[in-house]
Image 1 (tube, rainbow, N blue to C red):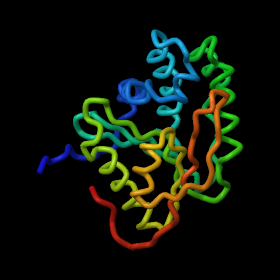
Image 2 (spheres, rainbow, N blue to C red):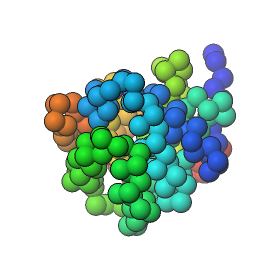
Image 3 (cartoon, helix red, strand yellow):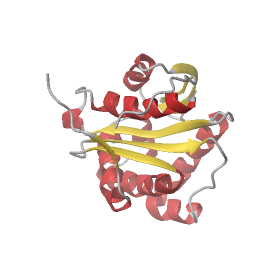
Length: 203
């Protein structure tokens, strides 16, 4: 049995590398192909966009990585209202250039379907392509779920493929609804109900 690297909290100065990791993991997804149709520009645009959100999570959530930086999870604490990233519109336009309107469309869809109940929001769960299907994503999920179960907090996410939807379903998430981008690629809104174990989270 292969021993996985340890889960740890990321540091702020790892933000660029984590954004690039997420871009690498996501660049072949159907929704991403609509967001940035040009494959030559896709990785750089995604990295710049994800950097805004990863940075924001260091202040309003948590960012976890495996010790070898082969996988990352970006969570936002939505138990209370949080502000948008500073100068978000300007930074989004600088990051996404001619694709800004597409990212704005996605933001509006996310906002329209986001639950109002207190929860933690999994914005990104990413594993480098060469390490996918090795249990790394599950390890990151279980790490944070242990904390959520200790405090009785539900979780929410938007799955961007049927494969990720099924992974999350195995970890206790229930599909609430799905919504479509203009190219008919789907996002799946998924909710993990609160549990209360009273146990300490795994280190």
